Image 1 (cartoon, rainbow, N blue to C red):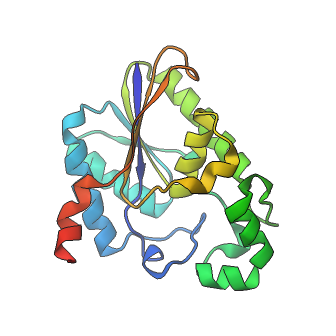
Image 2: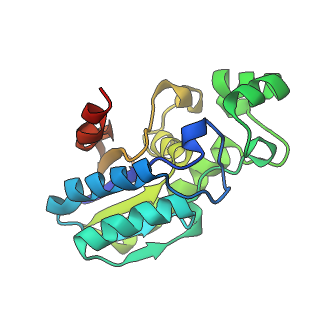
Length: 211
């Protein structure tokens, strides 16, 4: 069996301000870097074989922290980047609700129909991640693989892998520095088991400081 550890990057500077990032190349915030360090320590006992990362700075920096902690080189791959959201990138969610009310309503209620000029669709992102993951599993059969990516990208990949209705896209969360683990048996589709989803237990030291 092959185990894939999906990691969302730590908090970015734009996450702090509720701004949509998409493919904009934004750095981690100081808190995001701390989150990455805690996640890296969590992963240290997992006997990881390889680390892949989106080429965007917030993911790459998270992956570098994990790479340094585990002593494993990382590989940068464009296809694990976040969804491209064109004119939404750099806007806050409140600004999007005001300026793109109908598109936002579709995105939240019927994401399969979401088509914003200049942006990717959820289905396009799902396919991009799905086929990239299939390639990795063939290349590293029987290994433990980390993929450092982004919220929408990870959610879309999970939906495609588990053959879930794309309109269920908004029914679950992928938080900053969270860990989602899937086990792939011999049958790539039928043999998938979800071990954990959106696990952030390793971030409790940060959470307790804020109480």
